[in-house]
Length: 282
Image 1: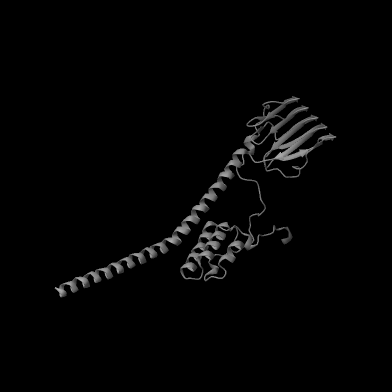
Image 2: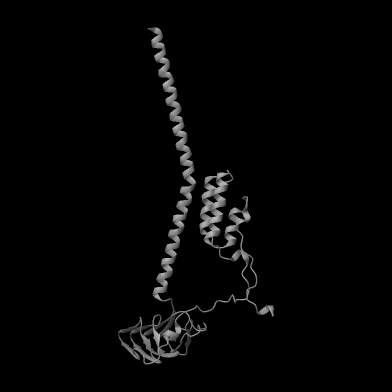
């Protein structure tokens, strides 16, 4: 029975949170204040903390410091929920299988090209021909007339490229003579409710390619999320360095003020002594 359970992740491989990284930063600041780390070691470890992704990467940073167990991975216990990746909730696939007719049912490129992309409706069967030319069918933002659609491609000394989004099952059944069909995207199971795309046809001195790409909006969202994460890390590093150096600057400023006061007191004493001597001489 236990052989059917999915492998559980090792504790060191679990992803660390921002709160975990902040606790490590607090330990490093305390160690610096206590003289356990010099400034160079502190900055190196602080940078490693913000770069850490897992508990296994965080643990060595404070292993030789007091309170090293303050950041530890939670116990990994068998879960009643499957750890195998499943389809995303509310993916919208049922809403994208709309029925009816397609926006268009064929395309031809003779020494030219064609393109279908954006929010168009793929019919139950789409036929396309590329002769000394090329075409692209982008299904990432498309709707589908049926749960299963067929794209029939004829490429003669030309090429057709089919782009599908993640979650769509792809089956390739084309025949190539001195040409070929791309089978790399076959074998990936489709998400529940997602359409099934069958790519078939004939290629002679030409080719039919199949690519799987994220929709442009999703790629942009992930790109912006990565940018925001990098910005937040830079801000956090600057704040940490500012907090670190601020007490040092305050202490240095106080020492300078005390030194100036002491010098002023000495000068005042010397002026008083000179004044006293002049009075004595007269």
